[in-house]
Length: 267
Image (cartoon, rainbow, N blue to C red; front, side, top):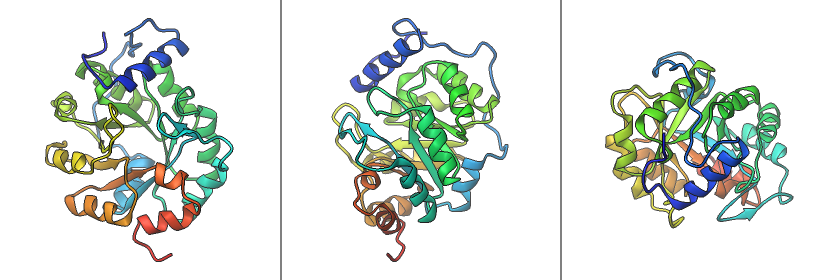
């Protein structure tokens, strides 16, 4: 199935590179041959961790760089960062595994999950089922699926395969066209990215404006551009259950203090 029209350019470039690494043709997705299950109430460690702290659940991220930040390799110890998150009250861990733009790997995920003991999500740009299997083998409990990359049928196919492997899909949305792809299915986790991946500008109103249109029953995750306890409180008051925070933590001089500040805890 071909890539849908006009996803953000950065997504096209990253997805194109992932296809090269996994031996796929331009525009190709290697979807699972057998449909996996629909969203269900099956217990999952990642979902349970967020539900237990609903409204105050922070998914703390390890990433070794980004197109905006460049490489962060050598600027901090990712394993100690993961341990710090666990000691400082994070509900779950996010690890960016994409290697070419974000300097990550599935081995990084494996090491950080073991170091922290937290349930972890693999953040990747999924173009084939092998990536889901690698996430599972590396110890992930969840996997990111970016709705802008897929037609609705392809999104459901990858989500079903993730569930078959015991992973819960976090479906990331950016705008109403992404939300339109979610109809007719049940979803456990749905996120809204505050960062416009065309311009990298951040607007918390992006999440808040889409909140009422997110699927009923899904845990709702605000992603990116969250830099202060005021940001968290604004999103929590609007109705978000969890907050995926990366840049402000990996660039903080004292990530423990920053995480506690973001959660509204005394430092």
